[in-house]
Each structure stands twice: as structure tokens, then as C-alpha cells.
Amino acid sequence: MSNTSKSSEKIILALDSMDPNDSIRLVSSIPSLRWVKVGLELFVHGGPELLYLLREHGVRIFLDLKFHDIPTTMSKACCQAARSGVDLITVHACAGSKALVAAKQGAIKGAMERNLPVPTLLAVTVLTSWNEQSFANELLMKQSIHKRVELMAQLAVSAGMGGCICSPLEVAKLRQKHPDPFQLITPGIRLSGDSSHDQMRTMTPLEAVEAGASKLVVGRSITEAKSPFDAFHKICEELTPYS
Image 1: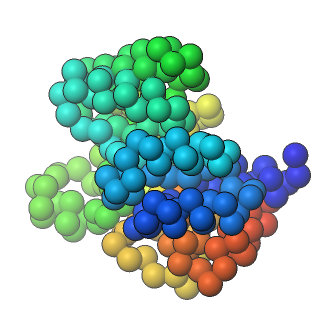
Image 2 (image 1 turned 90 degrees about the horizontal axis):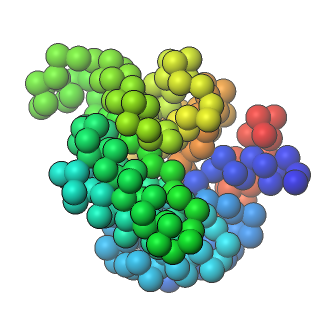
């Protein structure tokens, strides 16, 4: 495997705000793409059928629906998600340890029923749309975001999650406490000069990987580029020394 091919394993292309047909066309236009993220908007539009179509194009799927409910519901939801053959599933860490354990058990059950690999569950710590001011004023949190993220990450580890979702700003400190193979996957990735849009805690791809991120979720920097193919490969080349 070439270094560029190895670095492509670190990039998860977020297909948010896309029509299902456009998402398939985009995936087809980047043959070296290895991972895609299907979030709430695209999943509601395209449904489970889209997951099967994407799998047929040879990409692995990060199903980012951020399940947050009572343990029984999370277990059944993760069971169904695993039956669709996805590789990564997000759940909210703040659902609590019982719900996280139930979610993992549900994912194992669903994968076994279809003779599929068990997907990795990732616990969402604190959404990247929060900043310190809004976190304190709207949620009345006395903890800093960094402390909250650390607490949620430890809860994920204790519940047997395979990793967590955090902003790139929290990666370095979490990596010190939670070495590989625990995955730290980071949204909030922006190229130099890109708008941060509604994400408050961001980094460039290289900065995030240097901090210890396992994989990077990259959306608009690729999907809204003049040439998504070129934008994707530019990031791959930037990450080659870390492949």
C-alpha cells in the first residue's frame, strides 16, 4: 500500500448536506476514498438503502446518528445499525454507562445475526458547536469543556467503547490518557483559510494528526472544493509523513 493510500485511511469524508445521488457520484469520483460519514440529514433523506449503495462502492461507513436514549432503545438501534454493515456508530456518552453497554451489546447481536464484523462504537463527548461561553451560560456547566470531555471519554473507556468523538483541541490530552487502539476521531477539521461555519473548536488536518487523532472527519473542505478529487488528495499528501 502506498503512503498516499495509507493516509487516505485517516480521512472520513462527511457527505452532509448532499442529495443521496450526488453523494454516490462524489464517492465514485474519488477512487482512493476509503471512508465516508453518513449523518442525520443524509440518512433521513436516503435511508438505510443508501448505506448498502455506498458499501457497493467499496467505502467503509461511519454512521453518525449520535444515538442518545434509554438503554433498551439504544441497544435496539445499534442492533439495526450493525445489521446494515456499517463500520463505525456514534452514541452520546452522556446517555450513561448502562446505555453505552447496552448499545455495544446490541451492535454485537446485530452483526452476529448477519455474520458481519462488529462495528466500533464511538462515544460523542462534547459537540464541536459548543464554546466555553455557551457551554456555561446555556447548560449551566461549571466544568470547562476540556474537563467534561475528559469525563465523557473515561466513561466511554469504562463502558467498553472503541473510541470517542472529540474536537481536535482535546485530542492531545486524551491521547496521553488513552493510547491506541482507543480511537480518537475528530470533526472540526478545516484547511487553512476555510470558514469554520458552525464549528467552534477546529484545527487543520496536519495539526489534528500530530496531536494524536486516529481519523479526521472532513466535509466542506472537500465537498465544496472546486475539485473534490484534488482537495482530498491534497490532504492525503499532507498526512503522508504520518501514514
